Length: 440
Ligand code: MEV
Image 1: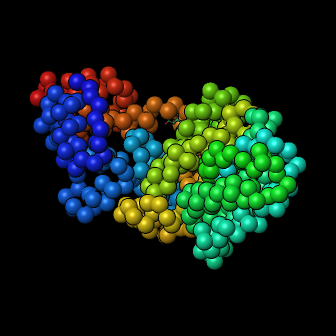
Image 2: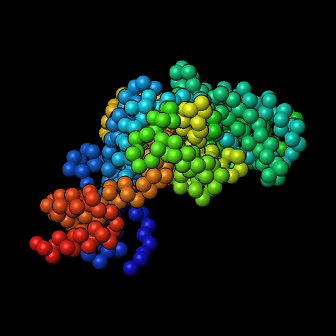
Image 3: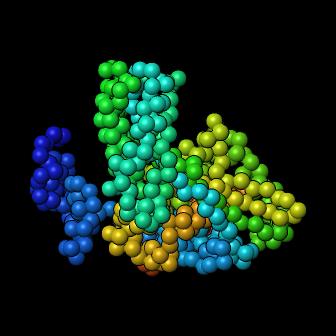
């Protein structure tokens, strides 16, 4: 039975659960047991999680794994990754080891500018609006001082505000397009607070601008919000080595491997259907580290995919070439990340992940995250162009299938051994479990 409810958020957690299980579940006791099984036995820790969002009824676990041996600019890292997909951490670890033996990853932060916009409507004379903007710009910045003063002390703040005329897209549509430096913070709250203050000043002061007609004084603010598109908050990650050093796989020569690898990258550069999956593989690495370090993976995803389309067609984020016998594989991506603020000082596992990474600055974290993405992409392309993806993927997925069939520890040991020399497919595993159970 489905039902609506009013005042749900005001109920206690246990009353919320009562309502949920009684309304939606046939076995109410079982549903309650599952929900409560995931509560932390430490009440204080559970309360912390309860208070992250509204209407928390339980915790939703993801594994937190680690990928060691990442050599980045000569420094070794073990990278924390929160992800459910079986093969991702294994692939990252393999790629890390591969490149550790070939000089490691080189990274560079290209820029760190973030963007926010006040969107508004104005139907009067564009020249008078421009004059008003010139007149009010310094006051916009001045009125935001209570918000910006601490950030400014640390070297960040508002970089610039521009008036942008968007009337060719929508009649009467203009923007205050602002850029920010938010240092160690991802900066969403800082930027949004500044923007809302700009909007207030911009609207209110218009009433006192004598050059405006009475109608022109009625500036309509539509909204004030940061942009998750951050093409000027860019980081580059790359690996390179002599072509002949790409010779680890005995079934394929270094030259043949590198040719196929570059073809695979070129295909993703020109073919959107492939580019989406190619970039999804990159995001396997990126999201896992972004999540483990308490950053907003939806913001990163949105920004990265927009960047992948910046030239008008969706394309590969990574590139590869050979010059003078040197293979180079690289990627430049926009990443707005923080190592202070948000969950970073709150979630115990996020704090632990950041400590594992030697307490990185936001710039260092950008580099680590980009490396995780490039490593993941390298691992995927390496499998795709040699063994095919399923071999490694299904090996890692084997445990999930065994768990689905509630295999005992002895059964698991036997079947893992069996599948060291047999191809893992879902039906082959089901058949093997069946055979094993028939024997015993
Ligand atoms: C699977 O999660 C990711 C891959 O599909 C990426 C790719 O195809 O490059 C393996």
